[in-house]
Amino acid sequence: MPSQDSTTQVTFHYVHGQSESFSITKTPQEFYQQLQIASEQNWITLHLSDQSVVIRLDKVAKVEVKPPFPEIAGDGVFPDAKRVTALTRGAAR
Figure 1 (tube, helix red, strand yellow):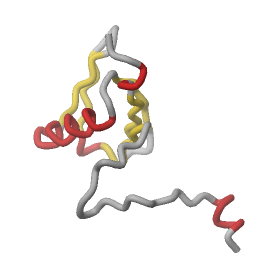
Figure 2 (tube, one colour):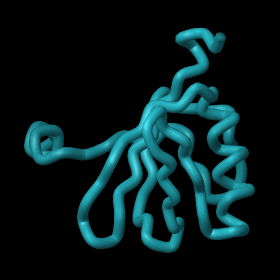
Figure 3 (cartoon, helix red, strand yellow):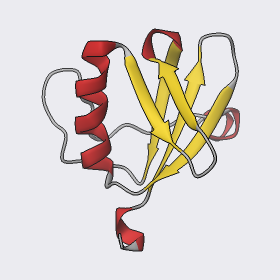
């Protein structure tokens, strides 16, 4: 049975504005590898206890993964990014 450390929360934000989250029993690194493979086919399938969910990746605007996986590096990766909110933006002035 997978340990708690290998559970990852994934949130898909769709181009039409909705989002949904899933908990998967993979590490963030394993999920990222599977996402890269799935992106070649433009589909990702999540098997839940009561149904399977198939997501068209061309309808996804953003994917959030928790916990983070800073091991990913290279072109297009910004390691020390911080999210700016209205609260933090106002505090910086």
